[in-house]
Length: 167
Image (cartoon, rainbow, N blue to C red; front, side, top):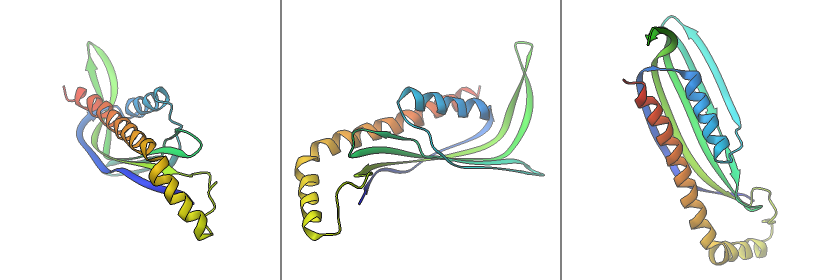
């Protein structure tokens, strides 16, 4: 039975103003591929209303450390009141978006994701607890530190891109 260890829960990033949503998504894609994460898109919803477009995307990228441990970063992007604007930069017209964006990050270390340890019998559950607590203990701290570092790196990458658009 797989166990989930929460590393970061509900790290948030909010922005209001001009940005290019396609470019933001591309930055996330590039960061995931550069850091060896497999991208899995769970939800992609777009609604159009009188106030503008609303987009909700949920990404669940993962990376396997070994056959026993997996890093999962849950990224939820909610963009509201998106309107297309045309802005001139150096006499060249660019199509960008104006609106609000709210991003939430959560990170998890998932162990035994393949379900190799049988947990139906109390003896196996006891042995697994001993192995997790004393043998794989060093790996957990190293993996949780790596997951925390990756999540903060992705957060800072997105934050830097959005702050560039302020000016």
